Image (cartoon, rainbow, N blue to C red; front, side):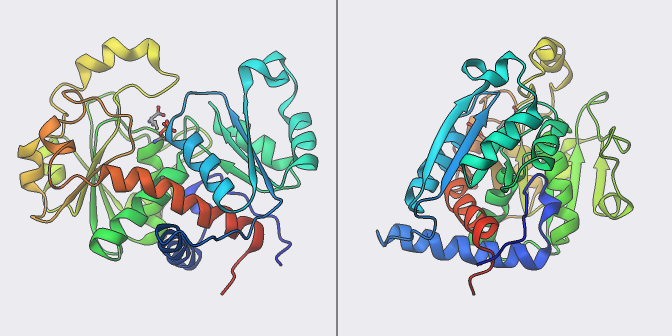
Amino acid sequence: MKTTLRHYLQFSDLSREEYDYVFARAALIKAKFKRYEPHQPLADRTLAMIFEKHSTRTRLSFEAGMHQLGGAAIYINTRDSQLGRGEPIEDAAQVFSRMVDLVMIRTYGQEIVERFAAHSRVPVINGLTNEFHPCQILADVMTFIEHRGPIQGKTVAWIGDANNMFYTWLQAAEVLDFTLHFAGPKGYGVEKERPGYALSAAQIAHLREFEDPRQACEGAHLVTTDVWTSMGFEAEKLAREQAFRGFMVDAEMMARAQADAVFMHCLPAHRGEEVAAEVIDGPQSVVWDEAENRLHGQKALMEFLLLGRLD
Ligand code: CP
Ligand code: NVA
């Protein structure tokens, strides 16, 4: 049984070799789940889930996943816990990590999960921050592999906001070695010098920026987008709706991609805004597999963080 403490705060916290293992393990765990075969390596283990923002998929997948692995999950939101009344995050980390085996946090600033992890005795998982959403890209890459094989050398087109999902895709592009195309409106583009998270030369080498979203889709194996207004940015909603006009992923954009390109969206989606109904509900869309793979990918991740490699 492994003893080294590992966290999953950014996609780049795992190496390519570790992802190869986790994706293979996720496929095995998924296959067992489909056969109704129990897989319970985390019996008697407890996951605490701390939510400071809304969630459907993240809560469902972590809670169901931990149950299926033989353990238990506890849901805590900051509104009705002492975290919402100013208890220091460092103190919370000390207390949580003496009572549970694993902690997942969905919050605003990335520094919050980093401060929690720095004071935690148990692995901490980023369930989405303003800066990153690594669990989602874990599921997305798993879904691409299922449908189209290895992602190495492929092209992913990101249309829309340079947000937490985009910057996580960029980390994945470097770790797993694929090309990421970006097209978004002026004022919402890629920030090379993001405070605390400046892009590395290797990340920039995997990125190509376009003004025209149709050009960004050219030759892509995967086209993806996200809400125009992420959680925490609601005050900008109207300005964003104006700025993002023309950046809806539609059939014309998909026609520029590879003939067998897949469409992904982390959900929740807004048909007629960032994506046309004909795309998200069309034959190239794999969004339901993508959502389902949150469950299987995170089960493999939790097992890996707690038990290490089992092969
Ligand atoms: N994609 C995703 O993280 O969904 P939720 O916000 O519903 O958890
Ligand atoms: N970028 C979105 C993702 C939601 C799952 C947000 O942060 O709200």
